[in-house]
Image (tube, rainbow, N blue to C red):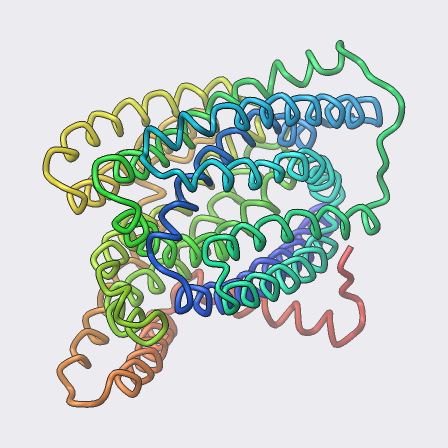
Length: 491
């Protein structure tokens, strides 16, 4: 019992600082992005979106699944961390060289000459990513998420300031490049002084082989996932233009930002927590169920509400030049609503050391996703976005299948857990939509919709005594009590 209380306290502490990190930094990032979007053109974002795809794929190889392997391994020591550190830097150097010399060919393919210098400069972030992956693994193992909060806050503040100043001075796309570089650099520097880990002059191929036996499957899974997720952008950038890709990605960004800030912190904390309890499957199931129920309770209404108020939000925040992104925003709200179920199931599988199952799932899901993409590509860019919704629904079913045997947590049981939140969200969305017919200006209408939506959803949750609502209320009471008593610590 005492052990469970300690785990719960550690999880609450980790969740608090992870939410602070995501919520605080992404809140600042959101404001920065709004200012930059008003100063820059959609095609600037389209070019950056293309470059980011190649940087993201390269980062998969830089981290090589070792980050998660270091978190999952029970007895990881200095030899493990130092070996991964040096290997990651070596891989970063090789991939930077590859991107540097292939930049002209990529630019020719997309008929965007500006891609050459921008890609070569942004690829420098690979070296920072190699260092950050080890620092983050150390923090995750020790559940010291407060350090991530301060590093992210400092990084986003400094990088945002640089980006806005450069955009205002007319540097165009280079304002976005500078923002990315400064963010990666500052994160590395701050963590270097706050994380009490330094690489030692030790290296072991044997330790790397042991970690890679687990990590290579995650590498392959992540690579497949990233290729699939970015394939849409690669195709749109080639078949249409950078401007259309800018609208597509901008519409995708809003729901992505919300889901990442809610589900991301939960799952970041749950992976090391699951891993610590990997010998107690019943306990993992209980924690996993709590994760799904809580994430869904928060995510569903936000996605439903965002879809309903998409047009006034875009008009007010980004100006009329971004209105073509509204349909994409609404479509991706539906696609990302199920994301908490995806990640909770996959994190549990990873924590149990079954990266082989994880890889198989990714291959199956992406094969089906490619088939859907292959069909929708002939019907235009909006059909491609709708295909993402279909793929998300199918992927949810596939991800839950292994845990029927591993944790005795069946799909029907998971569906039963999320249905109450889904129904309340749909009711709330319908009420909010009706407010559009009231003859107020855009700003007043949006404010009323947000207030009414929150009151309707919370009120219904209270009225029907939803388990997840009561759990959140009780958890908040416990947290505030501990904090007021001075017993809640960030470590």
